[in-house]
Image (cartoon, rainbow, N blue to C red; front, side, top):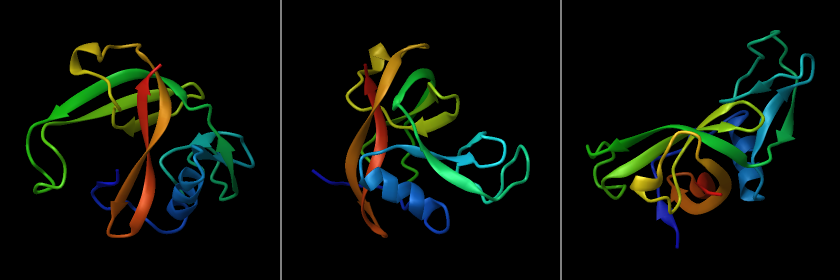
Length: 136
């Protein structure tokens, strides 16, 4: 089942990220000069200033470091209320804001091991696969 979501950011760098997601892969920019990972998408490395990147595959594994329940309908009926947002520290280091997939509220806990899944979604830009996280 496809879920309607708020519009994604599209354009240089962002399109590449969504293309990898469409293939079922979570990849982040990795600087060619200093090997630092960049997330969210950047045009130049915040560590060395380079604008040369490769897209490095992530394991899709991480740890829950924070979460938030939204009770206010910011998207005017687009999302089921309430909805949850989680902050995952990927095993590779970057922090990734996402949504939980089938994790009951009472099981959200600091240090919870999570793994990547993709949810079929659509927005004004069309169909896409949204990276979300489930309990490992």
